[in-house]
Image 1 (cartoon, rainbow, N blue to C red):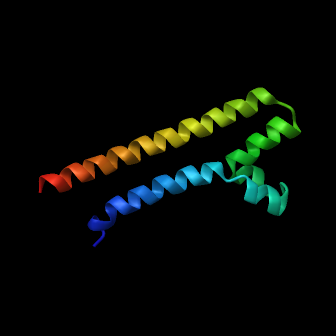
Image 2 (cartoon, helix red, strand yellow):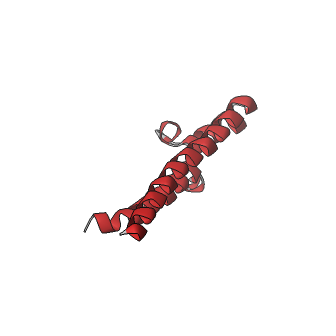
Length: 91
């Protein structure tokens, strides 16, 4: 059963990874930067450094890091998905 779900699991992991790197509004509206938010979410950390501490350079580097991280994860997951699709078509 699990090998048949491999494609679906791969797509869900990719979408959730991209979503988790872009979650900001929920954290900001519910806790407004309460305890623990800066260490658990990259987007809130970028906001805090850029707009509260006025260090735009480090904040932009953090934003670029988030984009690169999402691209790397997506690249490997899409590659794994393509390999699974190629193997399924050959059988």
